[in-house]
Image 1 (tube, rainbow, N blue to C red):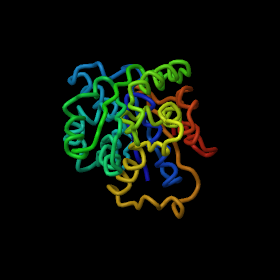
Image 2 (image 1 turned 45 degrees about the vertical axis):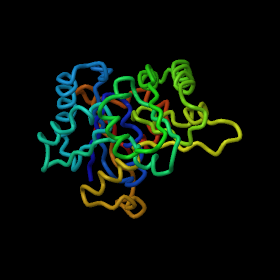
Image 3 (image 1 turned 45 degrees about the horizontal axis):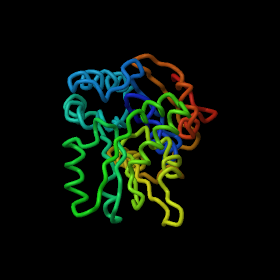
Image 4 (image 1 turned 90 degrees about the vertical axis):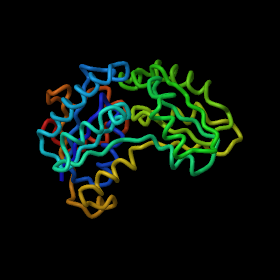
Amino acid sequence: MKIALMDSGIGLLAAAAELRRLVPGADLVLSSDPDGLPWGPRTVEDINRRSLAVAEAAAAHRPEALVVACNTATVHTLPALRARFEPELPVIGTVPAIKPAAAGGGPLAIWATPATTGSPYQRGLIEEFAAGVDVTEVPCPGLADAVQDADEDAIARTVAAAAALTPPDVRAVVLGCTHYELVAERIRAAVQQPGREPLALYGSAGAVASQALRRIGRHPDAGASGAGGDGSLTVILSGREAPLPPAALSYAEGRALLAPSAALGA
């Protein structure tokens, strides 16, 4: 079994690590666009063009499914990607986990990039799934870039700035950018208030990985009895096969992908 994931950068690591956990024998293809980062400030036309190029590079490896592990790409290019590749190649998008977070009641906060915060897309999700719930949209300028570069000082600074905009009584935080899942515990530590109930964090990696497996007829819990051994890992950076970027290895999710038998660039 082979599954491809695409993103502008290393935000795809969280979903990739979840797929590796669920099905250790799966072969994974990670396609990203470090030459074009960041995608957020680009025009919709440019995001579409770059997303299609990243997806084509992944599809050349003949995966059974393509995961769009990027909120920006999902918002702007999912219809175009599905028109290009489906039904031969199922395409799975990433949606912020507003629905499950709202089901637990409020108040809750949604951390997202400035381009996504307040966007019609995010507001639509709030209206659909969190009507009547106290929701605060928190822009996080620079956080995705800091995570991409594994810049510890910048991560600390941008997390602290977003935490200062987060109401102290929130019970949950939705991580509305896949990069943020890589620093989830640092976000929890910054927002958690002493003496209050434990803060709930809602990312998308688990749901996206499970949906990808369902789309190809594989049960999400099949990993325990799967093919056995560790699957291969192919990394594509702006169309070029390469090792996993050093910044990716700063995170547990990146290191989890480098099992002893994983074949980089295979």
